[in-house]
Amino acid sequence: MSTYTPPFSSGPTAPAARLAEAEPTSLPKDSAMIIVMRHEASAKEIAEVVARVESRGFRVNISRGEERTIIGVIGDERPVDGTQFEVMDGVEKTVPILKPFKLASREMHPLDSLIPLDGMKVGGNRIAVIAGPCSVESREQILESAFAVKEAGAVALRGGAFKPRSSPYSFQGMGEKGLELLAEAREATGLPIVTEAMSPEQVGLVARYADVIQIGARNMQNYALLNTVGESGRTVLLKRGLSSTIEELLMSAEYILAQGNSRVILCERGIRTFEKYTRNTTDINAIPVIKQLSHLPVILDPSHGTGKWEYVTAVARAGIAAGADGLIVEVHPHPADAMSDGAQSLRPEKFAQLVVEVQRIAQAVGRS
Image (cartoon, rainbow, N blue to C red; front, side):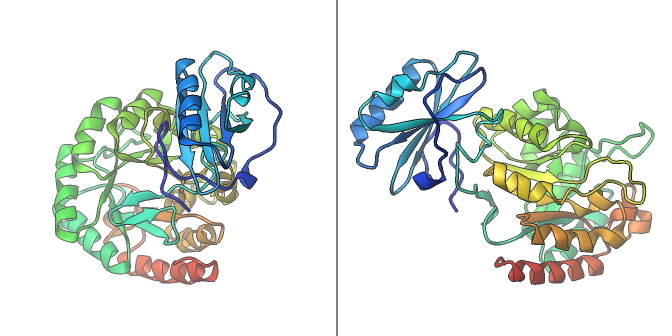
């Protein structure tokens, strides 16, 4: 595994064996390719290839490994002809990236990304468990929740200050006062904060308080918001839309990455299907599929995936067994009194048991 290389900069790479063979080609619109340098390529030869790529108006992502240097070429609406680079000294071959998502793809970045989160890295061997109430409701509620989830083993505190609700008459969150209470909880417990921004105008405010900006399912394709959080440089937790495909999720991540923000964590939170016994249908399939397609870490939200607290722990276990890099779980000290999502919120003691069971699953699959 490796730490994620920000787009258009240098960093580690994977062995050449991970690269697919392909004939030189002109790339179609919005496409990209990688230039594989020879093992013995000199620094001067690499620099000359980079200079030529940049002189054509394309962007560069360099990955340097022990055996190979790989130069990623990010195209625009103009086609990129790989043959113009294959004739250069030190170049072994060019490989087109035909998927619509480029920066999020395994081809561009073959190794798993590791996203820093307060001393640990999401995407590494350790499972990251984020927990807390759906909404910040009061000082007492958020502090009680924060201490409870930390004691149980959570590495970050979730809580909504701004809440996108289906009904305009439902509780919409405490706004900036909620952000201030989250900051107080962080000061008291040391847990980093994960909270949602709902519009581009909110990003600056949320970024002043939050360690991770969440993009909720209803905003997954809010492209103005995606561009703004990309520009913010803050770590982004991007949730899959209610009826969105895996490719659409990765394309939304591409918006953030294209702004130069490499700190993106994906979240599978269940999709809308015909089934009525649960709030959503948890797409466990999505976890290994995303892990194969993309280097970005992916976590699971079993709370929204089920909508019923009774099923949360079982689905959380399944997610970790399937390869999820973490969980985001709703926990409330008094679910019956919760102002939102009480039916899917675990009591602190139930959450503590979930962590114990998840630890056992993680150990069984060689993680911690």
